[in-house]
Image 1: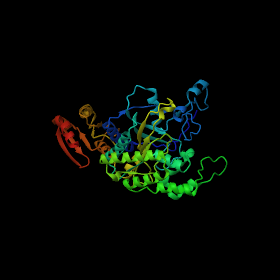
Image 2: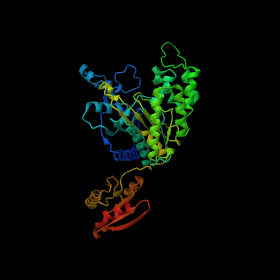
Image 3: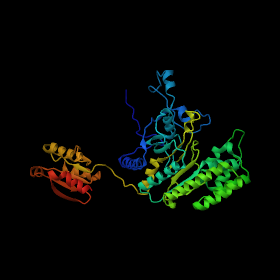
Image 4: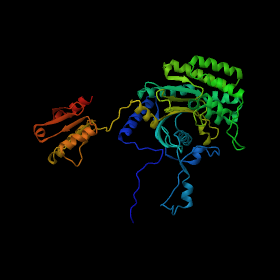
Length: 466
């Protein structure tokens, strides 16, 4: 049978990370991990596959596009029995928060509060576009079991610390609370369609006030159009008054929001206002500069499970990119597993793929083709063993060292390889050097070389690397 040629292409909405991007990703992940551990967070890991009911709560109104798995055997799905099909009712996770809720429910002996971080791939069946993928990597950090508003503020503090650790000079953490939004929804009489109301409000950056107004007043196109809010001019005017507070300073925003809520006497919105006040006071006490955070009443976040404060991080230098670090409070997410448990939770997630795009565009993470610090050449077959011993000594001293393994054994080819891979230093152990107990050390960037004692190689290399 003739073997068919297969085109080596990836699935739409996914991407390959070649060394330059993968190294950047690893560097970014390490910095975020360091921040998390400095706040006392511990790692966990969960499967990419979760049961359909776990992810959706078996909610008939669940409308996210997910990747549902199917067991196949061969091109024609042969010999897959019903038992196998029944056991395969699984779905690729769309985030790391719902699996966390499952973990909390399945392992009740975990400490409270439980502060965890996790990184991994997540999958969403959305239409691919710039900065939006079907498969992407998230880095989550969450606090479970604390109702204190201090936990929400600590998450924002971590978001600020992470952005600073990544070297981003210009960013804004915008936050709001679903309680204010729920209150506004009640005031304009669309509590029963709060999900659609939040979805529209959250598009303020993309469509502006005019676009929001059009969406809010849209009439049903037919009897089956249940999402149309059809708000009156008076109701829309109320929403516009709230959204007009965007861009004001913290004090002015809180004062004017308080006045608007007093007019309506809505207790839910009043509770939300108190949350925003407390969060602002704590952030000011932590001396986090005001330029890096702001109350924004349009921030709603798209996930349905948020119950309190919500936050997102945007880059003014890349306004079309969207949020690179976002989250919120999700009290009660464990209720689908343990009805009535109402376990508190709050956290945030770094979209690593989108963050990489931002950092590369802003030239904040320099590209690197390799992690190798030193290349040890093989001058000839007789010196292969001595060169390999030298490389091993460098590795044991904590120096990333590569031995040349290419088929072209000419020294010129080995030096060219080091140059192409941007390896900073090359060590050449030739016959004359070996006989005299010396090694030639080449600084590739400076185009300089020196002879060092074989016994001093580790010390000298550590010195030049530092």
